[in-house]
Image 1 (cartoon, rainbow, N blue to C red):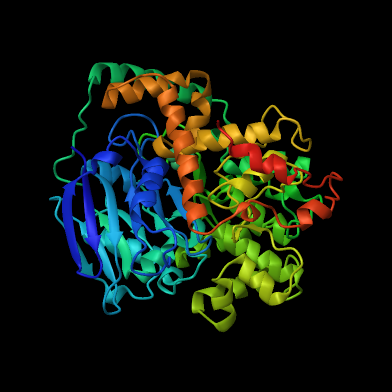
Image 2: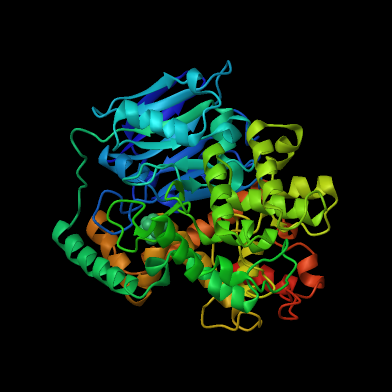
Length: 568
Ligand code: SF4
């Protein structure tokens, strides 16, 4: 039987118990939606005592399904004011599963300010340890210190100075499998600030002496179907650009089609996109002695991660992704991959979302605070964020706050959260997802780019967004979406896996129902938190300012956005 840990930050206690019945067959995003709708008041103060943090594994955690060890972290978001599930790779969900822990709930706030680490030892004992000496310690130094104390296999989920300062752009960093670099991030929505409000510096999970063993209703059937699925995913990965190159491969497609955001979502075409494209990325890896095809979690056969070094072979960063390259790159008029890698490293270290932060910097450029493409000026602003200067504190409040303060006309946010690396005028289904996703503008909520639809046209885009938003809800409940993408021809196998693990029907509708229920629950939560149809809109400039690259505007009307969730 899976366990849950209840951590009370007011009483400074940790209680281990069996998982709640209503959550036992859920995981990831679906678990968080059902947990939050019943247990976190939608109108609570995100940084107050009623908000909670939920950290959980996926539906197939502890099994051999490839990428089953995705980590989900949920809370009411300080940035969007709504429900937030932010998920990440790394080794933390794997070590949670080894410990037999499906979920950790963190309640209340301390009576006096302080900082604690939730430590789960090799013997399975979980305690809160005083972490006052780590105040202000950033993620790279902190994770090194934890590895020295608890061994290389330990998993670390931590916040840097940004989370401690309750910045709304703060990210939670998670250690990557093997390297132990804190380069995987549950970045979106500022949940790290909720950690900070609770005085929770980190969760550190040691590898247990005795690993938890999953109980199956039909183990033989599960093994058979799991093997079949893993083979399909491995076969698909052989020709997958994310596997062969990394997510940086996206730059070539988005750059050529005008989808790549340029100069603060101006809609312009960026002639230099190949300088930050797939080949440039591979060349840089080779010349610096870095590498790609790295699994961020044990057992991943897609292996889209990487290790990026400077020209002298010194490590800069890892898990260096398209979103960071697009938004610190062309969206800030920068085409120097080494510089963007240094920005990524600094963001991971202090613990801020690279997307929210890069968009804030692009807004600073658009408003004339610094020049377009000025790399030293960008590093200067990131250092202000690190040092917590007055302007650094403003940057920490996210792109919208910065844009409003500087009087910028283009502020690319939905539900107060800034956009991922796709211009919605030229991938309209993605724009629909940005507008209507309960998560705010997001890259993993239902990205339609490259589907069998005309990206700049209207036909089929709402349909694509609808289907993908549902699919992402169940994908984010069970596996990494990059592996999930290869399961599409054999989706019914996911129903068979659920039945072999938990019993009950093996119909695929069981899986689809998880997706639909999760999405509608999240929308219901946001409505109770005070969001209305007006929160499901893109900023006006996308409707009025034509993209110079394609001549397109975002012309999906309000009615089309509103009927999207009519599943009746
Ligand atoms: S596909 Fe990439 S992000 Fe997903 S688990 Fe594998 S390495 Fe991690």
